[in-house]
Length: 367
Image (cartoon, rainbow, N blue to C red):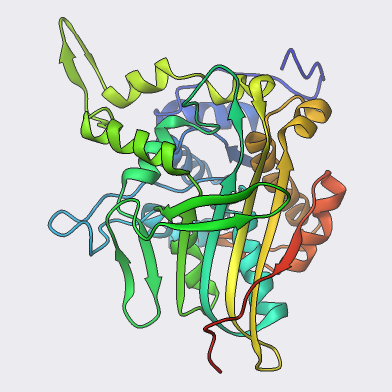
């Protein structure tokens, strides 16, 4: 707030894990909408507080998953967002809305999927959200540009995949390694299957034979995460060390640099996009990568924020504008692909960003 130096902004301290504490703040502030931009561990307390106070809600990541207790690498347990969608009827009865997963991924990536179905494809055989970058951080061999707690959660959980014939299923972490050539000079990056909200949300509204999320982690990053897992440093449960108890993952997060503070040490670009393969509106083979790229030097110079943070932050702002002017009319619990994509995409440039479509090889697509 001090940095922004604008009388329209104020700050309050709140325990994001305490539903009653959040409810008290909501009553005090009387907002039109609560935008949840904190760690996904706190999604449900904030979501429930909004439900109970009958106030609208938006987030950029959904409630956490729980692996299948007996067969975690084949069957899903509790999926990302299941806890939120289970309460959709309550939100409808209250006459309020909760727009979930409205960041960059999930968020803009889902809107790209909706756009592909509406405008480009008559049949979607394969849809993969492909995330990659060539970001480096001065002085660090391992410094995630996003929350390390969340990075560990999504990368080491069983990846979730949608198959139209099979339904949702899971695999081993880091499965199906492939090298994808990212645009705007980022180049080839090793990508693997990762658990992510798009594999839940997109099949709920977009008709596709297969949906997955692949993260361009790169070989070194993948090996580091595997080592973290081998050493047990990914565990969320607290362990006793001397006279204190601490979660190994929390300890790791406290040692690594805060992603929000390393923007001036970062170099390179980050890319979020949706790869879609199938048949175009004329019934001919088509494959495209619809994407958004942000250069860290540009975002730091113009906004004082590193690329991944800035790329995520503009999307709930665009969504709120579309809701405020009546273009989007959310009700109950909904995701980004519940709404028409064109109005959102038309505003991206007004918010200082851009989106592009790259034609891809149609090899292997059958009519």
